[in-house]
Image (cartoon, one colour):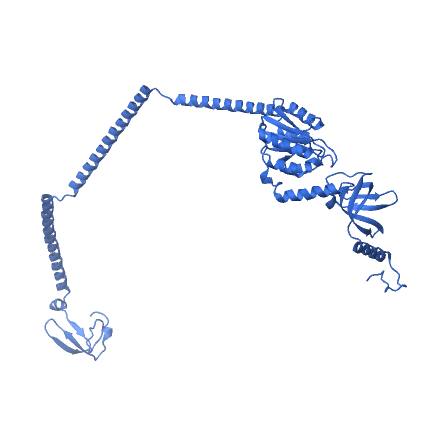
Length: 450
């Protein structure tokens, strides 16, 4: 709902928050991004990276904010009192109701056309492939001769020469003088680069100039210079302006140095550092060589101890061979003796196990004789015992007893009467004699003998 529309009831009171919010929306929706020119005042850089400042002219001022994710793309340092142009969105900071500009980017005032031309050419050359890293040539490690493309009266040349004299006095330097500022400077720079390439007398080139404004450095932003650098067959270092100054030549060059002095340092080696490295390598080489010699000496000592005179070695081999021969003879003698003992034992066992017919016949005859004698003796014993038993049997025969005058009494049921208690008076008994028998009646019974 738009609170500022005619349809809004007049009697409805707005809160301060509603007023500020609607005012912010009204400003942002109705005023597009604008380029605004003014002087920087009260510039403050917070730890968060955001910039807060005021933009003013002779009659008014407005608060501005440039957030960190946007100001990181600005490659120069704004200060108070500097005339700038800002691309900003007009808005309102609701918590305090402050009218302010949210700045998208910033450029120095009066240079807008140059910056636009710079960005246009940069985009064009980038699309053409002049900035590709694959085209960058590596710098030589130890150049024999360095070429410097710059003006003879620039302080940057003196800085480079003094740096080279300090770092590597023996390094040869060729200067290709050229204008570095002005309308014809770009063509002069391009011609100097082509001349250096045609003469092919240098191992690396340094294109340099001291610091200055964007107008002063504009010769290095010309397309002619960019194509000359791209066509250069010699590795080229750009050392133009200060560290924060960027030109088209920096993007096309093989290596960009932040300053001319840094370019000289990149192109040359420090003799003190090289001397120190050589000393370190020399000491390392000496130590390594000494260690190898000592190891070789120890190895020679070991080999010399192992080395034997050929005659001594032959004698040792003869002695060793004789020793082996003695051992072989002893071994064979021992084995032969061992086998002889085994053979003797086998013969003894064979003789012991071989049957002796005569002896066995004698043993057989003896055993037969002994068997006959034993059988005869045993028969006699048995006959004697039989005879004795016959005698005993005869003595025990009841008939024999009867023959001696005895008789046997039987009861009527046939039981032998052994006691008078077995019969009663009037019983009839049978009496058997040695010859015949009779029947009798019992009349008197007595328990004792008559």
